[in-house]
Length: 600
Image (cartoon, rainbow, N blue to C red; front, side, top):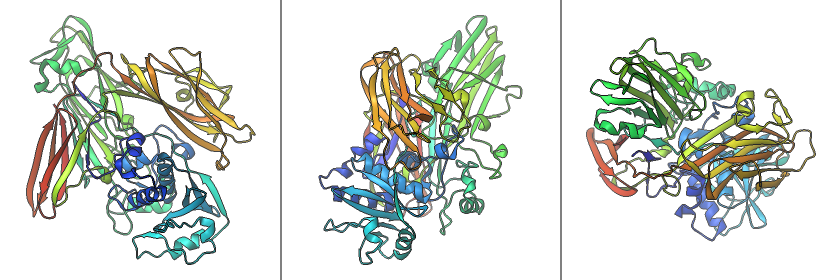
């Protein structure tokens, strides 16, 4: 009765839900590699979905700058909308690799100044400061080495009047070196929205909420940019905010759900609904477990930039009742952490617990007699950061949009994601059934030495149909050349190779990130993974795409677009039961306000 991963996009925008959706987008349907590269470059550098020049963001799970930096292009395109120059170049190179090409980063001295794309037996150089690709319409190309001595090579330049001399000066400032372009597949927009959920996207954020991390503040120019009004990530010199926001309201016990509220829960035991609220069916103990998910990370109102203690409002829980206890789980019910309910019915701010996360489970426990232990209401309000380019923006005339749901194949799967950061000794071994030979969470790179075997559990009550396994492989002080991942279904035996690779020459920093996706022919109750480092591993990550034993039809979705024309408010509302295309007619110079999505 709920819905999986609802999303909107204009028909002419690139689908960025997943790498698979990106690869199969009609925009890349050409047999000419040069044409495809030109399209990719111009879209990446100048489209409404482009990643702006800004600062880097970091994972809340990983303390190290090396492994915590968000470099996944889909994360940058969907969540932040900005990144540092080097990270943007890496993202562009990774997207070319996703389209079947080969790419590498280029440094002149110590500075990454561009990237190169392989076309046949030639390399094509590109930079994003300004955005320029040295590929002519006659398919003639220039590499970084060519441009060290060639003053006359004309690039595809965006915008056409930009000065190219500073970019060439950077390229000629030192000896050339080349590096591996790589990114972990951290981002997944999959989320399971229960009925009673409402999401509202605001293109122009009403408050300074964004992913703020002390590691980003080590970039002093970026820290100075953040501190200036309007506070937060902004463009230079236009002073325009680079982030947008989504407000999510979870109301799982809404009156209009009636007795169907229980179908949205992960578990219900000895609890039913009355006019006064949820209470016990029989004297004793009762439990309700609910799953809350968002398409992106929860973000607070940022107070002092260098002190997260005064950040607030990322997730606010409001409840009233008596005889109840509340707990939350970061790992699908494997562990439970208590929420202090002494001040109820005052709102409870869960920013400290949940900022940076995008999903959690809530356990509501009642104890006593029917009618005496009760939950009168429960509402959760959360804010999520989103990229401005990920929000459809109405333009004058006919706007054609697409509503989609489900995973990349349109299937109503549940996604369980497990992070195993090497900087957290307990987290690194949380799912391990065979620990590494040696572990040192404080080691800068090789946190685990030797082979690690982990168990990948499914979403409770489901079977695994597809999975992804990824790791940061490291090789400091070793001559080992081979690394890889093996997998087995249901028990750690009869291993099958998932990844076997030789250490690439371009991995000059001693780190290689790899993520491999696999679709099972037969669903499994669990998956076992064997990570083989070269010689070590720094962090592990896995996802399981799962299906329940019985499928249920998706809930209807109501979508409301709000905008103004010459100061006059306009609104469009439609309800969908399945993937659909729809049109909106907008007048002159519409000013977009919000898009609201409600799960009925």
